[in-house]
Image 1 (cartoon, helix red, strand yellow):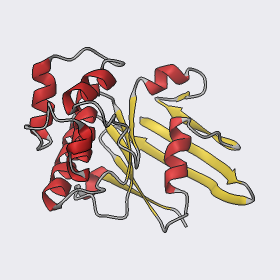
Image 2: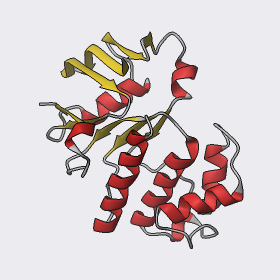
Image 3: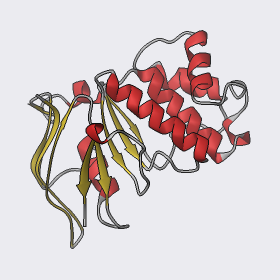
Length: 205
């Protein structure tokens, strides 16, 4: 059974027909890798799936149900990481994670510390985000994915600002999420380093 399905998705941006009948079907344990040149509509597709931009026509279904029927229930099952990390510069890494994750579930200080350790930034918990490097901030955002427990990850260029070790970390986190029954949509220009069995390609033109 498919977890997420896009049926004949169409969307215009002004006079530009950005999404032209896009279709996909994603099962648990799979990652839809969205590729294409700049301006092809990768970010637009991800935002449309999340409900952040309206579709002109077509449907997105989660577990067989149109996501527009109960958007709150759908949003409770997903975590979106865009080009912006969605973090507050004046808060510490720990404060950012506790505040953002609290909207979904309660977490203990130990769980936050463990997530930061798993993403390779164990010593940044008390530091304000403004003093961390771009790569460190990205790792903190990845720690949020681990803590929310969302079944669906929607990631837009998640490897941005990550060094080679960070890229390996991202691949490992994604593979672990999929192996645990999660699903993901990832827009990226870079290889994800996942087994072929976990990948579904979707090329936009």
